[in-house]
Length: 289
Image (cartoon, rainbow, N blue to C red):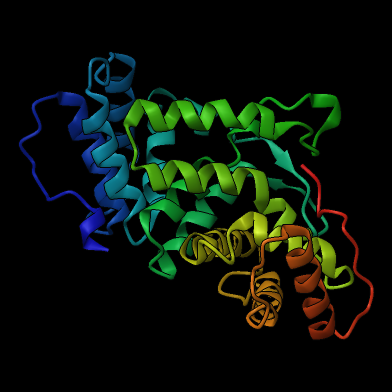
């Protein structure tokens, strides 16, 4: 994990980087949380424009340090409290106060949910790409029509250019951008996958790269698991949909990919159906936004 974190250097040339460094060190649990007076001072610095002119690559270095820390939520909370989050990551800051449906009795606030997900990623020592995906994959939900809340129709269309914009602004590694876009499109579909229909499961596995890009598939499962555990009462729990998809993927190990993609997918669906002890499978896809 240390290779994902820039070396410690307190000789920042831009005054705003000192503020960001303080927040990122909080995520590494190297300093105590700022008291009220410190937050007031930080807020005044932000209001005075201390972050203006900070080079995006240097801002990203501090954000990366923080999200790779042991408690990323501490950085996010501090940056939000002093107003810096709205400057450096306005797309993420806009998620606070936005409700989303939950399987529990009440909706969840996407801001705290995001912070919980990052802390869950830290708990399993997830790589940078997983943490970046958890940070940005919901940015298309910040301005969902109020009359539809807590549902977020068409958030993928809104989120795609925003994630691409964040990735370009900070020049994040390509694998971070790719996984974030994949999580945007697929995480909620993974949450809804069912063993009752093996055909859609086979199609999903192929779409997610389970057969030809297993490392990326594994990272996506980690994103989905951390998002699942971010809900109240689920911290550290086993993510059942990851186990379901791994069972399905393993069932396809004996199926050789042939020249006919349709025949290959059919063979995989039949193998998955047998593994699920079900004969109900179809060519429909697992869908949803």
